Amino acid sequence: MPLKREGEMTKLMGVVSNESLTGILERKDFSIALLIPKSIGQQQTYGETVKGGALEAFIGALYEIAGFEGTHRFLFTLLAEEMDRYDPGTNYIGRLQEWHKQHGLQVPVYTEVKEKRDGTAHSPRFTYRVYAANGAVLGEGTGGNVTAAKQAAAKIALDRDGSKG
Image 1 (tube, rainbow, N blue to C red):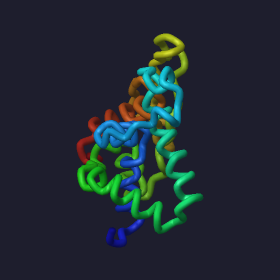
Image 2: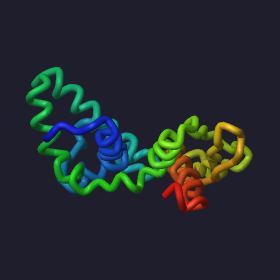
Image 3: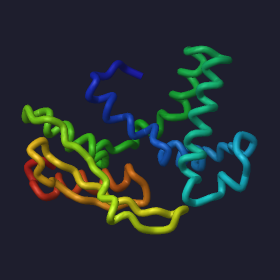
């Protein structure tokens, strides 16, 4: 892979989220059944976290056994398609942060709106607000996990002011 600047690499970080790692496992028909108990891997709420975490653990173990070069070859074979297909435009948190940095502003702050948390213990719904440094609310979003809620809040903040998008 050719060398990339820091900002370009940051945009590719979404490739290694639990959601995308789980998708990679499923698309490649890569079974992790031996790494995690079947009952945990099939849970819809925790499935992505556990499967993605299992792949991360496997990669760490591979590094211990095969070293950097072997792990590098494996990862670029496994992730090449994902990196080509990844759309950094869907990383709303990163886009909002980048916009603030480009305009000399402090990065936004995300805070959970705890009184709006709902759902069951196994399927919670989180609500987050994103604030500017001056305390102004930029957006509020809800999702099935903390990251999804923060992404929704950042997307609303970007959508509110078209110049940020």
